[in-house]
Image 1 (cartoon, one colour):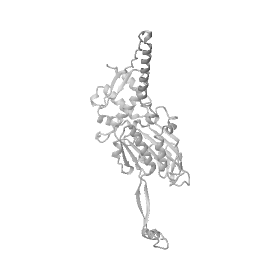
Image 2 (spheres, one colour):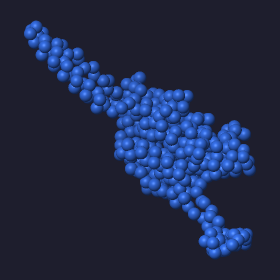
Image 3 (cartoon, one colour):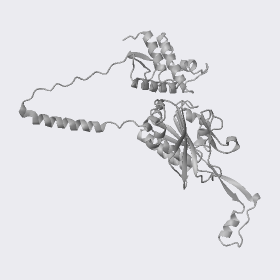
Image 4 (cartoon, rainbow, N blue to C red):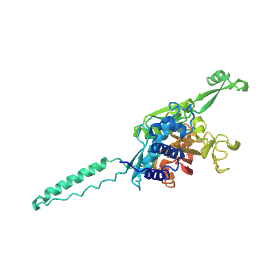
Length: 394
């Protein structure tokens, strides 16, 4: 059935003004471009290279095989269209972006058909016991089918949906703290003293000392990686693990990524740069901090005098960005210490904890970028339940 162009253009504007699209200017530009080109009779030119140049400002040398921005954004546009039409369409029209093409299609919405109510046939009185038995069997069957229905979608499901809905493995990046171990020429003397072969303990001489670096994975990040992999495993999504410093930008461009850790995780720092809440390794010369780029002086730091190796409290920054610097979905759980990273991972996988955010967030948060600053007490190297300190949704 042919749909009037004026009606399509009017419907397009209502889609672009909806909450499903207002948070992403690029998605708006993408959908407006492909719809307009198709309506103007240029559907044959709606190709990946054309969209990359016209919508995303890629130059004449743009190669889709080296830059996946159009494919990534098409996936997001389809998700946002689905979100819009889940709420119904007032004018009875539907714009679709079929898989495998960037040319949209237009159709009239098909209203759900109302099923006619069954008309019971008249039965002799002696048959009512059999009718009652049949009704009981039907009720039991219906109850069984009800129990087979999937459980209702939770807020944690909505948080992770953009990650698990992508048809590619998810990269989990864990940090690699550098631990310096003191060694020197006095090692032999120390062993002799411990073995009772020397009467006096050796005196360490400064000129004898050197440092040897060892690489370890923080236990907080390990705990977070386990929780993340459990979530993804339940959703049937394969995962890959890499140490953060060993990850290349090409790795990040090819798949969604979950980044754990902060100051010993270079990509967590880089991917957080430019967002409202940022990580700083030396904020105003006073040490590690999370700070608000829009409100000068607003920052979160550990207590003065707190032992950095055994803090009594910690802060963490959680970010979920649909289109990160790599063009892919990125989720970051970055604590100022491994305890904060562990607390952030728990927050992202625990429905009760995450409800602190959703209870005050806008209703369309599942389709928007978000950042959350968390605080937690630390007891015997173990973080307590995290508490939301600040949020930003855009």
